[in-house]
Image 1 (cartoon, one colour):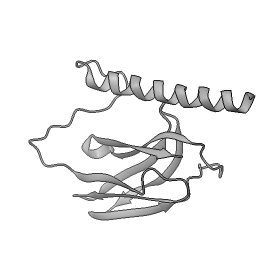
Image 2 (image 1 turned 135 degrees about the vertical axis):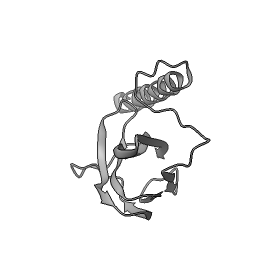
Image 3 (image 1 turned 90 degrees about the vertical axis):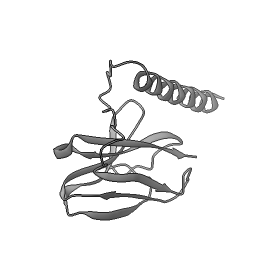
Image 4 (image 1 turned 90 degrees about the horizontal axis):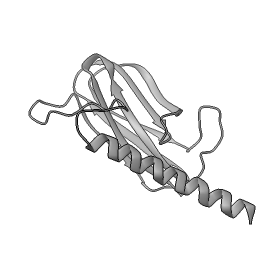
Length: 136
């Protein structure tokens, strides 16, 4: 019974975190979590992050593309913002990239069921994009 309640609490805590994140990104100019506004009139320095399959329970492929060479940071974080797994952190040339991921953290532990954010950052171009990943 205790494990059931613990899982339910974790699920509802993640859902509440996601709702708060969405609320703060959609309201006004005050942006406490640091997600940059995207100007749709200028060309994007990267193609959208791809996650396949999503949702998943075993292995997933994470992908993205960049228009210009530069330093790229691609990682998975929980709804609170704690980085759990770094997909890559290096300087890349322009092109498309993908990595297969077995849903384990940098510490080697498999992530629990829940919602996570796959985030691509290109600091030189002040670009950041996140997409939701569901593990079941």
